[in-house]
Image 1 (cartoon, rainbow, N blue to C red):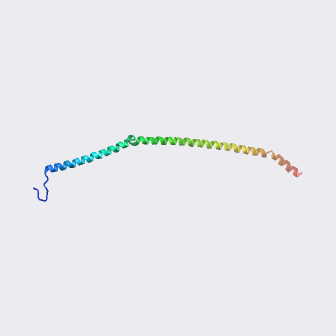
Image 2 (image 1 turned 90 degrees about the vertical axis):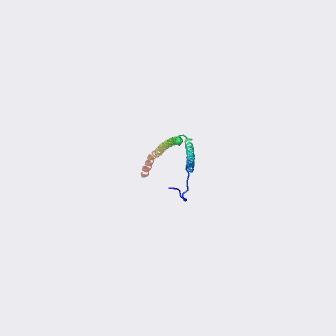
Image 3 (image 1 turned 120 degrees about the vertical axis):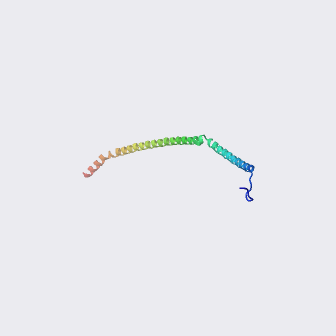
Amino acid sequence: MGSTATEPHLSSAFVWMETNRRLDSAIAESKAALLLLTARLERLDEHGSRGVDLLRVEVKNLREDMTTHEKTHEEAAEQAREAAKEQRIARRWLIGVVVALIVPMYPLLGWLVTRGQS
């Protein structure tokens, strides 16, 4: 069917140029997006293996901190056990001294009681 006054006639050269222009534009946009993605990927690689090496360092530091904390905790527990042991020994000595001072008074009390009865 022929072209009418309402339909513009497009020459094949115009269609080719327009298609070529759109493809060039799409290719340019794709190249820009690819460059952006490449830049982002390189930034991720700055810390090695997409940041996994950084995580390894953090986990290593955490492990060292936990080891230090456990060692400190064990030392504090050992000091607490030693202090409790020393307190038990001191308490036993105190009880022994008090008993040693009171026991000799029993004969004196017995003598006083018997003397008061006579």
